[in-house]
Amino acid sequence: MTTPRALFTATVAAVAAATVLSAPATAADKDTTLELMLVHGDQVRRTTLTCQPHGGTHPDAVAACADLQQAQGNFAKLPGVKDKTCTMEYNPVDAKAMGTWRGVPVEFNRHFGNPCTLNAETGPVFRF
Figure 1 (cartoon, rainbow, N blue to C red):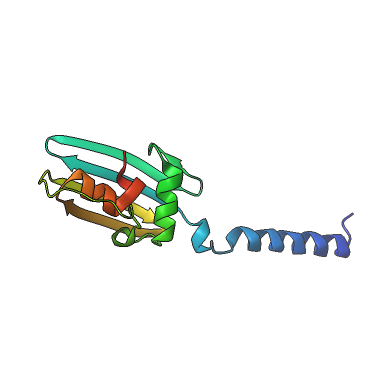
Figure 2 (figure 1 turned 180 degrees about the horizontal axis):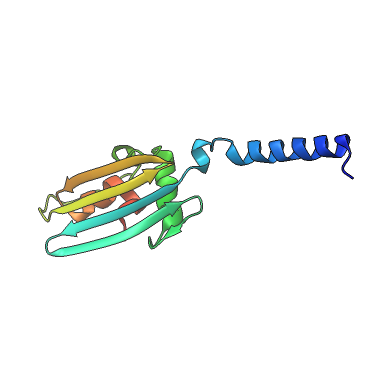
C-alpha cells in the first residue's frame, strides 16, 4: 500500500525532474551548426561546422569555433589573421555561411578579392 508520504515524495520528484528537463537552454547550450561554402572560379568547396561539441567535416573545428566565439557568431567581426599582408591580385572568392549560432539563424555572404584577403579577414573559419 502506498502511503500519502510516499506518494507526495514521488510527486515532488517527478515535478522536479520535469522542471529540470523543461528548463530553457542557456545560449551556450543551444545548437551551433553551420554549412560553409567557398566559390573560387569553377571550384566549389563545402564543409559543415558544429560547436559545443566541436565537429562536422571542418578540418579545424576547434580553431574555427574559437574565432566564432570571440566574434559572438558575427562573421563580420571574425578576428582573422593579424599582420597578414596580401597582394592586390584579383582572384575572386566568395564565402558563404548558413545555419545557426547558439540557436539563432545566421547567414553570411561576402566577396573577397583573393584567397589571401579571405584568410586574413576570416582566419580558420573558411580555411578548408
